[in-house]
Amino acid sequence: MGFLPTIIMKTPGGYQVYFVLDKPVFITAKSNFKAIEIAKKVSNQLRKSLGETLRVDTKCNHFGIFRFPQKSNIVFFEKSYLCNFATLINWSMKKEDSPKKTKMKLVKSFKQVDEPWFNLLLNESDIKGEKGTMGRNNVVLTLSLAMYASGRSKENCLYNLTEFNYRLENPLSDNELERTVNSAYSGKYKGASKAFITTLCTEWVNRDLKSSDLFSTTGWYKFAKPREERVRSHYEEWVEDLEQLINDKTNVNQPFLRIKRQELIDRLGIANSSLTALFKRLKATNKINVQTIRGRNGGVILALVKNILINQIKNHHKQAKKALQEYLGINLDTLKNVNQSKNDYQEITLDTG
Image 1 (cartoon, one colour):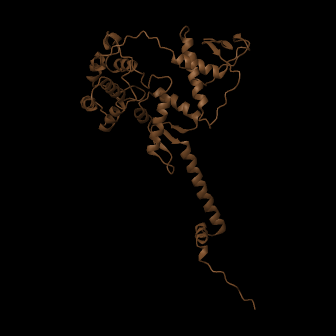
Image 2 (cartoon, helix red, strand yellow):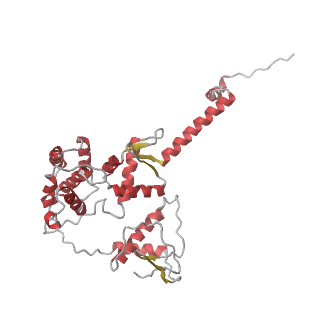
Image 3 (cartoon, helix red, strand yellow):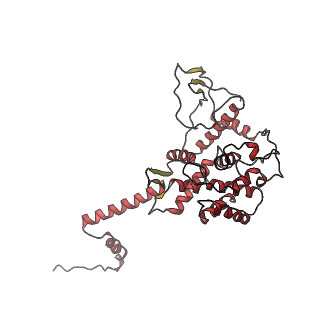
């Protein structure tokens, strides 16, 4: 790669590699915390490059808890091997722009609706929407994406999936079905995910199904990865969706939204485990407040932090005004009226004799 790590450490689960910067990178609100996003991109590129020849954990947290270096676990250390952040950024950009090698065979004329899996899912009626599982919402979204990628019209898709939905023992509401189809045709996705298709078919059709039973041997579309599979941007997109949902349902006077976890999973089109990871990331951003309530009548309480702060300021102002009025024994609004009408008074001279 043109540079070496500063420290290599041995742990019970493998090796950890440290690239120590020669100078700290300062993170400021003024730059909208841009350095964090840049550091993540560099981190992703480091993992990819190391992963070309080594087995690398590409999904680990960028800024998580790390093992502290000690004499007992350091297997390599060279204090002069420091990295310049600007150099790392340039290296990362060049790697990103370099031609991508792929062994995937592209079949431009092939349509996802012609794959065996499509009819297997479309004709299955025993699909539920259970908590913690990929159920009917995911199936509807996947089938819709396949039709979208295959050039079917939204009207045709909605017609076919309405029939499919009515065959389910526990169907979605018409509004939820239409919302999911609209999401598939929003342009955010390019096509159905092969990993999702495999999971859904083995979950609801037959656990013994193999890849050869689901997919044609002639090839597979190389789509831009759907949000569920992307490492770089899917969390940011889910955060945007979450912000939009909170904005639609709350305001400064009523900043809190209470919602069932499963309803939130369905609305965002997100897996349960991904939602948990998203909540952990949100705690560090101080942008969206998340409170989880356990129990039968539990759920999630969401709010934009800015709305909470504005609401608190307004309430404190009202409380302070009320306390001052009680102390003075007057209505402060009358003082405002007096100030506005001061030009109505005449100046007079008193004769004191």
